[in-house]
Image (tube, rainbow, N blue to C red; front, side, top):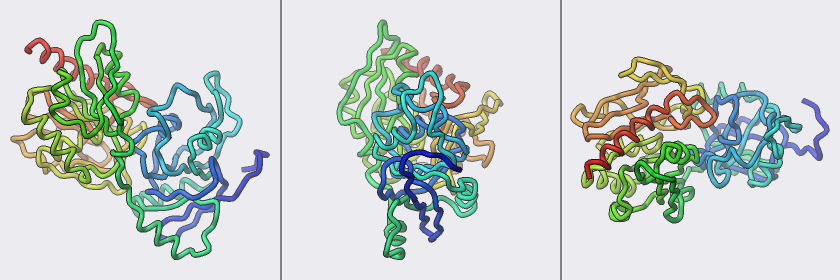
Amino acid sequence: MEHTYRNRRPAYLILADGTIYNGWNLGVEGTAIGEVVFTTSMTGYQETLTDPGYYGQIVTQTFPLIGNYGVNDKDDESREAWLSGYIIREWCFQPSNFRSQGDLGEYLTNNNIVGIYDIDTRALTRKIRDEGVMNGAITTDFPDDFHGFLDRIKAYKVADAIQTVTSKEITSYKVDDPVCKVVLMDYGYRQNILRSMTNRGCDVYVVPANTTLEQIKSINPDGVLLSSGPGDPADNPSLISNLRRVLDETKLPVMGISLGHQFMALAYGGTVSKLKYGHRGANQPVRDLEKNRVFVTTQNNGFVVNSDSIAPSVGSISHVNINDDSCEGIIYTRPDTFSVQFHPNGSMGTNDTQYIFDNFIESMVNYSKSK
């Protein structure tokens, strides 16, 4: 691919197994180490960049042309870009769209993200599918000590993910004539989760991940919503323990999304496993077992709840992934308690599973009336 964009600089993607891909620098110069993953979304690259669920990861876009509609100040899913690095095939450096306020390269530079373009993302994706997610690095300075650099890549581990991306204080978002009040546990929430609640007439209190049961009770909510977020869910025993108190010591309706879904399963004694290459993108097919319908969903998951770890006395599987038959949702025997692996908020994807939020609102309204 040829263009005349200013001062192109070579960049390199180096995987933990020693594979090297040559390309060109996009964003800031430097080195970024992370877990190399791929997302199959055709659009929504700005939402991908600002999804806290990608913290610590180098994200590959499988769709070949990225940047064609530019960027704007409306599509961010959080307060900043969280991923470690960004990989694309072809960069459209002259975007055209009535909403565009800048180009992708400028956006990455402003958010201090190291990127690379003009590499064979199809070959890279096939490698990840065949061999599984692996660590890697994007660098504009090829290392003199290559073997030492590989050791750094291999030693990398996503750490302190939730503690980094969560809110630092409680923030309220209020609406006129609210139908209910919900606490949103911020494990790395996406803005569209908040919008999905306020659009349905909820006062929303976004609280830090380590908010205690006593602090939640002081808000006097009608329900608790567990957000999506990054990292290995099993790395957070204190958060899981606190959630267990919410489930055991209150009758509040509780709904979990993505990481929140996994936390709920762990709180009830279930187990999770790491997926070989994850479910990431806006085109993940999921079957609702009760409705016997397949929905196309938006997801960003590296882990999955083991279906056989959910005891019948605890809950039952409500949704399954069409591609690998993995658990995508659970309805618990505790009243008004359920979770899904996918993002029903549907930002950058379909809105077909918004009924999940409607069910949660109904549960909270009924709970509010019973107080």
